Image (cartoon, rainbow, N blue to C red; front, side, top):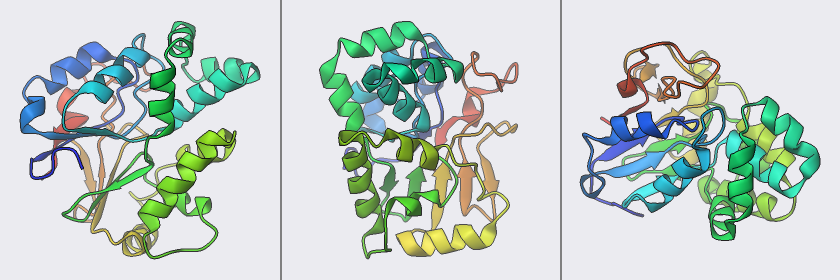
Amino acid sequence: MPGDGLPVLIVGDVHGDIERLFTALKPYPAADWRTIFLGDLVDYGMFGVGALRFARDRPNSEVLLGNHEVAMLWALRDPGRIGFWISIGGQRHDLDELSKDEPLQEWMRQRPALVRLADGTLAQHCGNDAYLDLVPVVESDLVEVINGRTRELLATEGEGILWHVLSSANIFETQLARLERWLELTGSRRAVFGHKPHRGSRPAAYHDGKALNFDGGLSRSHRLHQRAAPVAASVAPLD
């Protein structure tokens, strides 16, 4: 994995606000950190494709698939989905830009849904166990099986299934039993995710740190952005 042995930096939902992303990352040089982006770099803000390219090219970094990346790829393949995608924050100029960049399209289709770190941390986009819907039976290496199924669906017009899974509501904050079962099934000790903004000044921790939400509403263009939301609520080292 890129950056093995480096301290880990988590980046929550960016949603096209590349200026605030640059500000948030300034204290964390790429050479010194293993950076994990939790998905949803696109939509709402004006620079979604720019944020994708930046995350792709940042050394020692991994980028997870979010529901908004899935919606964008779906709109790219099926013009009948463009109206829906725009209704959830899609920027037409970004879709036009993506349509001209086939290597970026292919890179997006290869993004994992989950990343499990050596310390037992599981990185995912939404704080839900709905990822289990992607596999018919629970297998030993569940993370790899889910990631394989994710790539398969993106290659076979299965965006609708992934949209449903990755758009699932964050439930780990309130449903400890489901969180603990999910952690047990994936061989993890805690889950980090984004997807829905919290209102804190730092990543929100639940159940003695077994669940951590890194979506602090970074993007000023997001409909749930709170004025003066600190960048440290979305971008922070993993303790």
